[in-house]
Image 1: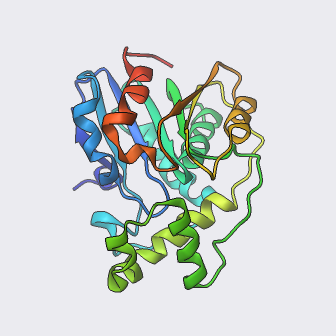
Image 2: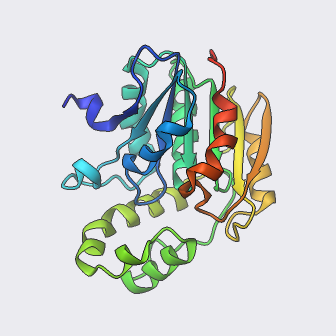
Length: 246
């Protein structure tokens, strides 16, 4: 496996597709979280998942827990990859990662995404109540409140110990990130209709971070509405129905 392939996992399609959709996972998530999306996307879309260290086939690698380090590492990789036109999709903590990568690409004169699709996340300059510093017990309780811990995972102590560094690193990375930057990229924000953690106001705040178009779409479900691809993917696929150029 090449260095770029260890970071960008091909989930569907190939380089002959006219648009690449790079999906960035939520806290503690791996690229495989988006594997079930393949059959719900248009055939011209190549589906790629960003595989961060500390999970999946990279479970033994040191995690990255600050946005600057992550962006400085992944940004050049995205710039050099053979992608053609591409979009970012980031969910929860992944939305902030996607925005940081977009602004890095612009600052360094690289091709930016055609669209930035952000989901279930506060905007970059909004504050939040942090919990990344809490002891393991309360920290896990906070994770469970978001709905990102399936019971079979939460009750499997050995598995939780294995995954805890990735969860904590991603939560810290997201909670300590703040930016007033604006991108020239169109931003499309998504939110779950029953999400108690991300308000409509927080989603609309993304508009202040683009010099281009902004739109907001609500999808049936809670904070992790994306785990029901049959329900969620029509809304997301609608934003990548035609090949685009930045």
